[in-house]
Length: 190
Image (tube, rainbow, N blue to C red):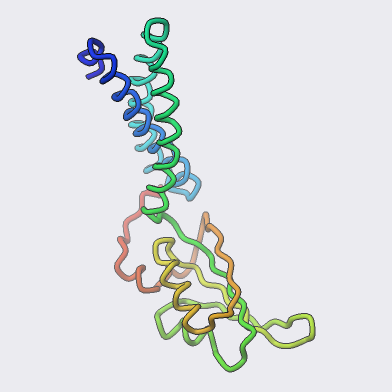
């Protein structure tokens, strides 16, 4: 592909830019899904990432003296690819997250409200500084379903405090929130 573009320097720069966007986007997604434990998927993505990288970097190195602007196309593709890769991984929503919620309201049972919507909730009783009771909840949910869960939390208690943390490994019950029931059961973790 690149060889036919060598006679058109502007098109070659665009091709290198686009190839770099592709390989860096794949690399970003590969790193993030690998961190979440999807080793086979990470390896497959890595194969295509490396293949595209070799093709792009070869063109830059071969033409470095005569066409130094190809280095700018290469670096620009890296920057844009990083942004696109993070956005793509976020949109894919691979993995699970732990949501910790604290409610100071005693007139609302936040845990029961979430359970009514199908969430598995672990509820703890806590106290704050003045020994006033608080509800402390833990919910593990698929990443793509977390915005729905947070919206439900806000509907039940708009002043609840919550934190969201990535979960690398989770054993036991599978999340059963609204998105989990429609999610694919297959996994490329092993």
